Length: 145
Image (cartoon, rainbow, N blue to C red; front, side, top):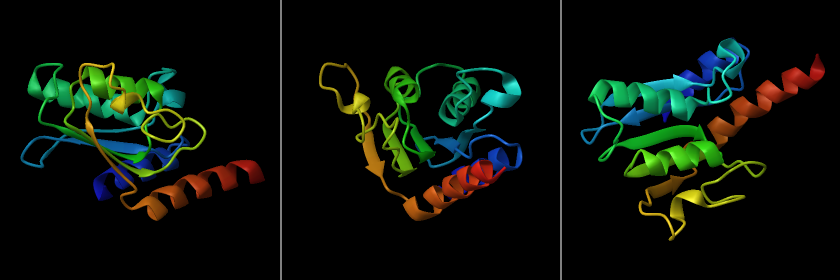
């Protein structure tokens, strides 16, 4: 999660919503890293999770991320939760809860929907306060402008 927080801080510095993510292989090595880049890239899919999963898939040379773990500073939205299922990730680990758009247990629970053919394990609340504080600082500064 510390590496994901580092990515989130880079997003903050770039003026993006500070969300960072990494994908770990089965040995715990980082094979993909990403941070929000929607503003810079003008890409609505430029969420940290998607960026990290794309990098991990490129590193593995395949779209299936079986045996891998996604670690992200904010609970994934419906798009990212769906991508986690489609990528066949073994596990999704997140820090701060997203009560407005979270799709891994808060507002929705896409990844544990029994109707889907794959359901990653979920670990929530890792370094939650630190992850949430970065988001709070970002939005506080944005409102002051």
